[in-house]
Length: 383
Image (cartoon, rainbow, N blue to C red; front, side, top):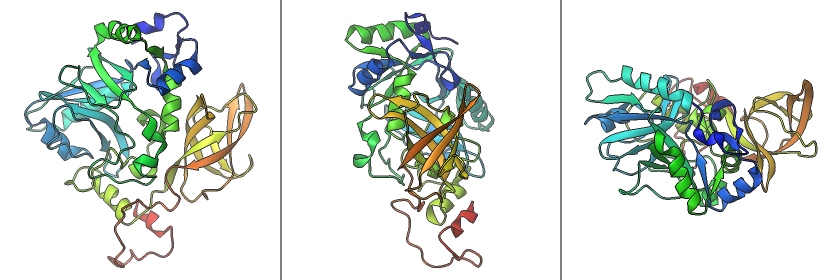
């Protein structure tokens, strides 16, 4: 459903996963700067909201997802993944409990499938699952704090903090570019969306669109389900074990792959930030091919998100083969207006090429016949 804020003067609709809200409201650079300095509000009403009630809700979610939420305190934000039996990412959700129900915030087109999957997993548990996306809308704001008892249900994005039980492939949180990004989502009744935004505007905030949010997300190396994830994605490739995976909890679907890649293997691909040559004044779209070397080089990955940052210029996130050298020259090859577009790209490492996390256990020799490493890339076969 389209947001009522699209009726604002100058509003330009977003497309793709962000359809239904504004890409910008006429001045995307000013909107982005306002968001970066902590003075903007963003319509996020296209996101999906799933509510899980019942006395068994936390223990049940704990047993079937990647995160430890067994004893999640009220008004404490975390994040979880639903994985396939092979450990590939199927769903992601921001999680917060208000003491009566657990709220899951996800991509708009994933809310119904996520609620449906949870419903099928209920068995004899005392839980009630409801897709309440039609009743509640999210508002994004650059605030680094949990919601208080006096506020509506609020989810605080803890990225890039390494949460309890997690690990990292990239730099420590205090050295991570995402440390400067403050972001949380406030849930309001959908009928009150316009009034809630107007209240923040009256306090001096600027209304910003997804041009701004996506540029700051790319700068922060923050993965997103609808963009960086495909049918082969494992969390390690995206450094998503920071916030969404607990390595020391009990079994859940996909847990074997999570542990095996972390302890013995290496992710087959890795996330990178690309600084794109902006001299052509056009940028490729998501889905463009990444090639090693020049435009005739071998294909090594795919662009997942493209953004224009107010300071960095044109940038992108891409998922490439882990074996690509960290200093390799890359070229993005896409299409604009029916003609091939070739853009030189310099990579900034997000997940290191060695594919080893910061706290990977020390090897103790071969565990079983056939698992003896025969080279730096041998553990890939564990996937």
